[in-house]
Amino acid sequence: MEYVLTTNNVRKDYKKFKALNNLTMHVPKGAIYGLVGKNGAGKTTLIRLLCGLQKPTAGSYTLYRIKNTEKEILKVRRRLGAVVETPSIYLDMTAEDNLKEQYRILGLPSFDGIQELLKLVGLEGTGKKKARNFSLGMRQRLGIAIALAGSPDFLVLDEPINGLDPQGIIEIRELILKLNRERQITVLISSHILDELSRLATHYGFIDKGSMVKEITAKELEAVCRKCTQLTVTDTAVLARELDRIGLEYDVISESQVNVYGEIPVSELTLALARDNCNVVSMHEHNESLESYYINLVGGGSYE
Ligand code: ADP
Image (cartoon, protein in one colour):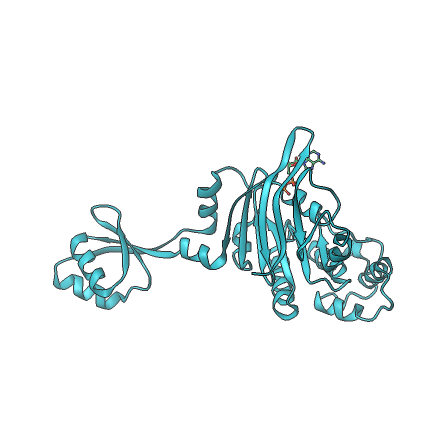
C-alpha cells in the first residue's frame, strides 16, 4: 500500500495538555480519508502539524515517505493544499483576484489556469463580486480553489462543511468527489458530522482525546454497520429453520425477535412460515449507523 501520509506516535503538548497523544494514522494514496472526532479531539492540531504551521512535541510523520525532520519535507509539502479552520481569503477582492494573489505568493509564472480553477469550484460567474458578499459555501469553495492553486495531489480540508446550508454541503461534497475521481487527488477531510462523511469517505480514522481509536476502510465499516431486518414472529424456531434453509445469517435476540442479515426473499419466507403456522407480526429495517458505531467506539457525549 502506498501512503501519502503516515503519522507515527505523534504528540503535541500545549504545556501539560496533550492535544495529540501518540497518534498513529495512515492515509493511502487515492483515498478520501475521513478524520472523525468530536470538537476538541485534536483534528485541527494534527492538520496544523501536517501543514508545517506547528511542530510535533514528539513522534514523527511522513508525507510521500519523506519524514518531517528531513530537509526535503519543505519541497514535498508543496504537494499538499489545505484549508485550515476558516479559508484564508481576502474579503475585499473578487474570486479571480484572490486566486491571482495566491499565484503570486506561489511564484507561478502565469495566471493560466485561474479560469479553469474558478470553473472547477463553480465560481466562474462571480465577476466583480467581492468575496465579502459571497455565501459561506462560496467562500469555502474559493478557499479550496486557493488550496488547489499549486496543483497539489493531496488536499487537506478542516471541517469544510461546518455551518453550511444543505445546498452548500452538496456542492462541497460533489467538488471533493470530482477532485478525487477526476484528478486523482487524495483528500483528508476532518469532520464531526459523521453522516455527511459516510457519503464520501473511502477510509476513516476515528480520533478521540488526541489518539487514534480506530482506522477502518469504508467497506469494512459497511460490513460492521451492515443493514439488518428485525423480524417479530410467533415462532422463532420455525423462522430459524427457514433461514437456515435459505442460507441467511441471523441472530435470535428474544423469544419473538430475530435479526436477519442480507436480502430477505419476503414472499418465499412468509409463505414457508405460514405453512408451519408461524406468523410474521412485524418486520422493520434496523441499521447500525456510522454514528452509533462511533459512539460504541469512543463513548457518548456531544459532537458540538
Ligand atoms: P478539533 O479540531 O478536533 O476540534 P483541536 O485540535 O482544535 O480539536 O483542539 C484539541 C485540543 O487542544 C482542544 O482541547 C483545544 O482546546 C486544545 N488547543 C488547541 N490549540 C491550542 C493552543 N494553541 N493552546 C492551548 N490549547 C490548545
